[in-house]
Amino acid sequence: MRLCYGRGSFVGGGFMQERERFSSRLGFILISAGCAIGLGNVWRFPYIVGQNGGAAFILIYLFFLVILGIPIMTMEFSVGRASRKSVASSFKVLEPPGTKWHWYSYFGMAGNYLLMMFYTVVAGWMLKYFVSSASGGFDGLDTAQVETRFNDMMADPGAMVLYTFVVIILGFIICSFGLKNGIEKITKYMMLSLLFILVALAVNSIFLPGGAEGLSFYLKPDLNRIKSVGVWNVIVSAMNQAFFTLSLGMGAMAIFGSYIDKKRSLLGESVRVAALDTFVAIASGLVIFPAC
Image: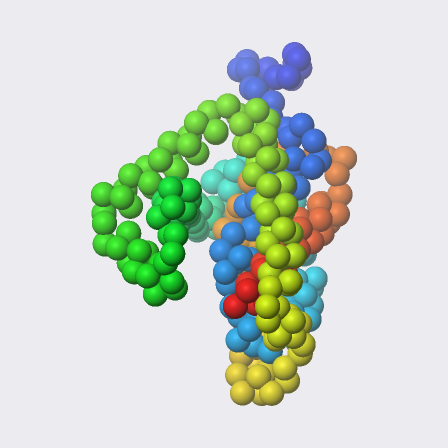
């Protein structure tokens, strides 16, 4: 017997709180894209595009994004929505009796812990660079001198620990306000700010001296480059990027899927997240190549 009451329910004599939902569709798309968007878009995508033939590589990447990335993201969303639990428990709830699907949850948890440890350190670097930039610490420095500053930072464990610790505390504070009032609210502002900054930087880079040559290198297919790298190597790189850029395979998207309303199309949400993720990746190339 189940007795519903408000936002919770009595199950077997115990009160269960209903899982919190996103307040808006935009919030879900931005927070899911915020998980997918990262170094895979801003750093790795432009790098491997330049290494693997420019626009020809982008077309191969988009092909794998459609036939592999979006379907797998949809599957991860479906696991989350069907179980209404995190990756730690979702497969235990959904697996047929006698199967071992719950083993995957351990890999998912390990992947998320490793990702958290990695990105808190990188976010600490970014915070340190923001402070240095705002205080004029990079004024008048050339590329080699900026690189020296980075190496000095890496050799200073005190600064590394301090800024990583600040990032972790900020993350705990935001999470303490819950899904709607914490994570969703701050992500909306941060993601919209990121999109605005990327567009502004892309426009600025395109009109820099030599910007046209950078655009040509980025957007013009270079078949000779593909031949020199190897067609198979280019295909594998594009396939890897399709997985890496969407944060697939570790259950992160299943976590967000557990908050999706049943009225929403999972395929439609996957397409929107992938489209926003790809926009950021391509815009990052428009920033980097003309500037370089």
